[in-house]
Image (cartoon, rainbow, N blue to C red; front, side):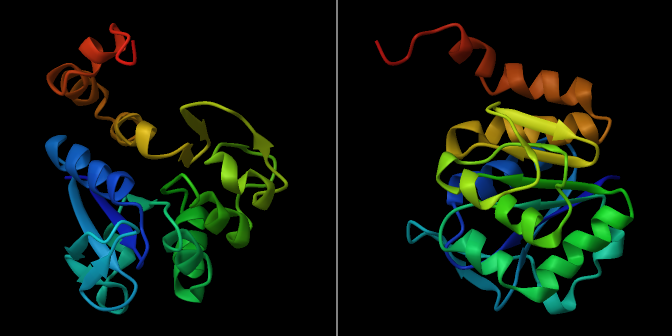
Amino acid sequence: MKKAVVILADGFEEIEALSVVDVLRRGGVVCDMCSIAGRNVTGSHGIKVTSDTVFKDTDFQGYDVLVLPGGMPGASNLRDNDDVIEAVKMFESSGKIIGAICAAPIVLYKAGIINGKDVTSHPSVQNQIKECRYVEEIVAEDGNIITSRGPATAIYFALAILKRLGLGDKAVELKKGMMLNFVEQKDVMK
């Protein structure tokens, strides 16, 4: 069974983190929420979450995917944590999947793993991620790195992770079951 870990820091974007956890679990992936500090983490909009594990007690070798949600100051808290940077570098050197959404690509930049790669992010941090090929896509994939724009793109980001894990059929099934196909056909902001 495939395993993913979503790293949480105070100030994380709730939609980005919890949508990914939800979609991956629906897809049959073991998906743990891992806090960089205590078990209780507060999102950028005041939603409190109890993580499954804490960073210092987590063996990252057993995971296939590392996911970094955005949100502020959550993404900055991840970027400024040396242990998180080392985990990102370890996933990169192992060729494992690394996902970062919204502001979280700033973590990938600090880890030095996006040089020359197609990367996207929330527009507010575009100038903080250098040495990459910045693309304005819903989801950008380059090698083992998957990035996305923000809360509205979180489900597509999670589905891209499922596909990369070899669960493309499950991603298609979930997209239909979660009504994304229906929504894509409608102009919801008439």
